Image (cartoon, rainbow, N blue to C red; front, side, top):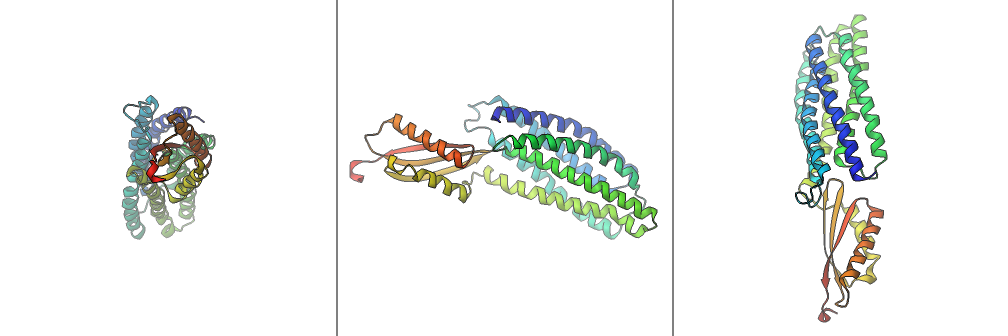
Length: 304
């Protein structure tokens, strides 16, 4: 799938996800008040935070679709990285807060949770999450190197789908325990669910922060990829007379590699461009979406 097609598909997913999130979020807060469930309250806060992220992400996608090369000469990948980082940055503090809150509720639980009513918003959210997960997965499978923003959306939908399934079964068990007379266990099901959800939020959010922080602060590519680039470059050793510095950075899913190579004084600019294109094509066979550039240095006769 081409980058423009991927962005258009991502825009459609972002719009559907955002607009449907308003309805689901309203359901969670309404039923949280009715049932007294802290798990639904946790879900409401998570969904509300996700709405803020999705608004920013949708704006970012629209900026990326304009492809303004004057404002973004290196592409708009940093916007993708920041959107993905922002999602992780939002859910990690919330996960910590609700983990502490839920542990307190687990020790001193509040009775009177209506587990059957809790199933209503969960069932609706499950259907939404299932459709969005399937849709996003199809796009990812058709893309050799999905953007960080697309992967962040897919992660969000998978988390929601897993959480919805888990909550539905757990609320059902809470209802069955309550009807069976096991109130001591029943009143602890809801805070226990909230603890598990909080831990899951941390597990998902922390890797997003770490992975995208590397790109935002312009760290070089991982060592494995750098070694692949050097290996490919050595295949063309007859074309140049020496190595110089190797510069690399990542912008979204695009990897930018610039390498200093020394050439004989007799070489022409057209020959250097032809060598650059051949190395670029070969590197992209090993690592997708690499933009390779040669920084040419002409060797003097005294250096021979």
